[in-house]
Picture 1 (tube, rainbow, N blue to C red):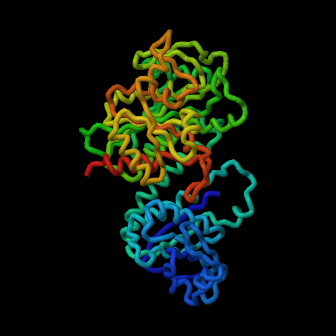
Picture 2: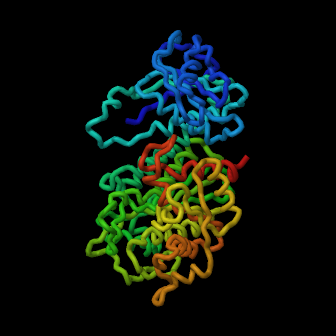
Picture 3: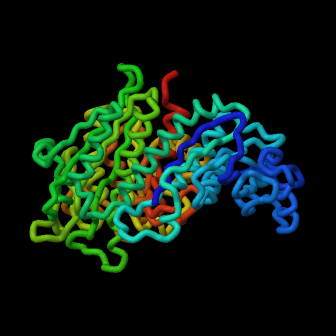
Length: 497
């Protein structure tokens, strides 16, 4: 069950039962708020007995501490002061959230001696709590015993030296959490509940935040000549959609920044059908579209001072009698033709038309597409980094930098003429796969043929958007990867003053 945290910030708080969390650095210094929460020094004695050294993200849990008005006291280790980063404060918030358990009232003493917390770090800590609180159990009719005990809403008071600054910064944290958790929800939903039409409806809901949303039908896409996107969808009884989301937070004359997402709501592989084992995971093949939708939510919710476009191609890849075949040739919106070698290399076909449409209509400052595109990128990078391909060194450098800041890390992969030749076709302008070797690179080379001179980056998030390892801020199968990364990119480099 997802727990809702009602978070407020204050300079002090009265301890009256509930849970108290104190932060502590490695070493001999006292934990934050020790006098208020632990007048008898039970925490220090317990730490000594348990040999608790306050290593980063470790906890010491004390039940009914003697002499304290708290029901539970948790000491949360931060590690060494000189090693603390913004990511550590985010993770610490996640660890704090995991410590709440069945408590309905929590006081957290955030400040530690010798460390300047500030509003941004306090808000980052709170963001970590909101991200860790998310879980997906909408379809579970029987709950765990712990779920029955856990309160639906937990009142959290974070005690810090500048609560006004923390409260001001927290507004943006709530916007980010909303976008990340929306992306997680979309990836986690079962494919029978989230088809192209239902996904388009979810995008349409962003109008409540001031996003302009336009949904293109199959008829409209045919008129535009989107033969590649429509070809993927033709084997399904569920019609395709293209959702166009436009947030106008910048100056009217400014060209927008643009984000394009692959939205294959379920991928059987089509005629080139996948093995049965693990195919249920292909409900997450719309992780790129989910991230773009979550990002647009975040930008609108925090009133980002930027013009931004989000475009998601929504299709289902099924193997019925009308499905496209290996050997078929489709004509894209650009006029370029693609020979279908493998119908399971479908995401690049969707993106080819979506990228060209975005470039042609909006003439953006840059385009970044996100896609759970290839298993090859998982072989290369595992679940720790997403693959980054780009035709622009400046944009690639910005993305790599904000990846380090947010912890949503990227690793730049090569592009080149030698790889491009691998997708040349005897019968069409190109073929949709160059084979097993360099599979993620040749997929990127195909996309590059549809961006022209526009600055562009392709993020292959197959290993990070779904089924990635659980961590301090995420216990969900769908991670929401990409929302925080791209929000930070916009914030750091593209918002107007």
